[in-house]
Image (cartoon, rainbow, N blue to C red; front, side, top):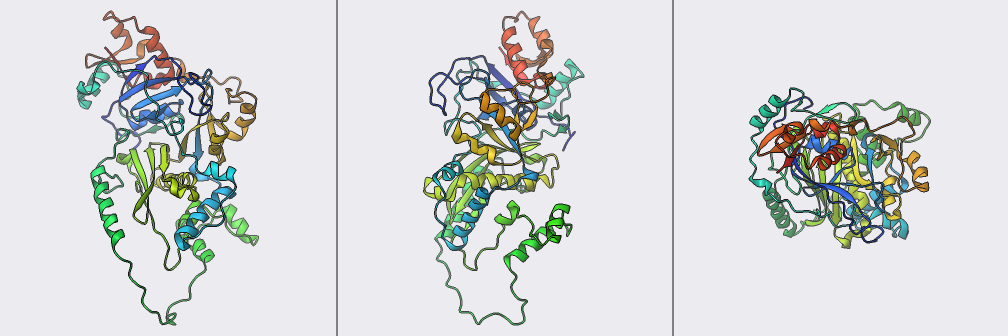
Length: 478
C-alpha cells in the first residue's frame, strides 16, 4: 500500500565493464555496450524506478544499454493497458485461438510477415533468446552479508533523517509501496492470493497430468431443448450483458454514442478471451497467473499456459507497483501457428487491466525494449497507445511522434521540449549510499576512511541510477 513502511532494502554491486559484446540483432561483433550491476537484493519499488531510467534485468543481473554508442539502440517501451486499442491482426490472433480451442480448426495461416511479428518472443532483455551475461565476477560472496532490515533502517535513519525508508518515489512523483522483494527466477509460496511456489506448482502439474489421462466421458443422449428453460442467447447479446455487468450497467459515452447510432460496441480483450465455447470444446487451455494482486504479491512470476494438460508456453513477468513488466517469453514451436507471442502479450495486458481494478496506479504494460533499427523488433510498436522513454531527459513520449525521429537517426532525443533535462541525473556524490563492512554510510563518510580511489566509478553509477536511487540503494564497497 502506498506510504506503508517497507523493511526491505536493495543492495547492488556495480561494474564498470565497458567492453563490447556481440549484438543479438544485427549480429555484429563487439558493438553492443551496456552498464551493469548485480542485484543482491532489489525491492520492487526500486526496480520500478530503475526501469523508468532504462534499466532491465536478466536474472539478478541488471543492465542499462549505452544508448549513444550501441549498434542497435533499445528504447524502453510501455503501453497503457487501460486504453489499449486492438489492431486487426491482434484480433485475428485472439479469434484464431478461440477457433482452435472451440472447434480444433484454424483458418489459413496469415502472411509470412505478419506471422513473423506475431511469433517473436517478448524478450524484455532484448537479446533474441539469450540472457545477458555479466562481464565481471563478484570478488566477495554477498550471500555472506547479513542484513537485518530493522537495524539497517535504524542505521540509515541515524545517518540522515532525509532517507525516506519505506516508499519508492515513482517518476511521476507518486509513491508506491515496496512490499515484496523482486528475486528473479523465484516463485513465492502460495498464500491464496495468486502466488505459486515451485513445490506447489509441481503438485498442480502432477494433478493436471493425472486428470488428462482420464478417459473422456461419452455425452448422454439428449431429448432436445427443455421448453421450460429460456431460449439460448446469441454471442453478441452475451457479450453486451458481460460488458454492462463489468461497468455496473453504465456504458461509456463513446460506446453509448455508437449504440445510439446503430453501431455495435467495440470488443475489448476480455470479450475475446471470454468468448463462449462450443458445447464440447476441442481443446482446453489453462493459464496460471497471479490473481487480484495485493501489495504483498509484487515480485516475479511464471505465467504458464497448459493446453490439454501439456505445458506449451511460459511468460516470466515482474509485477511492480505501476506495471506488469514482461521479462521473457518462450513457447513450444509446435504451436507456432497459434501466434503464442502475440497471444501471451494480449493476455498479459488483460492481467494488467485486471490488477488495475484493485491497484489504480498499476496501469502500464512494459514490453522491454523497442528497437526501431531492427525490423523484426518493431512489432512492439503495434500495441496502442504506447510510449518510448527518451534516453536523455527520461520523459515518456508517444511512439507515433518518436518514429519519424528514429527514421532519421537510430539514436535520438525523443522529447520535443528543448528545455527538458535529466533532473534526476544531477547527483550529489557525497549523498550516495554505501554499504561498507556491513555498515551503511554516505560516500562522503566512506571517503574519510581513505577509499577515494573509486570516485569516478561511483559517480558514473550514481548518474545512471539517478539521485533518488543513489541515496536509497546500498552500493557495496570493499
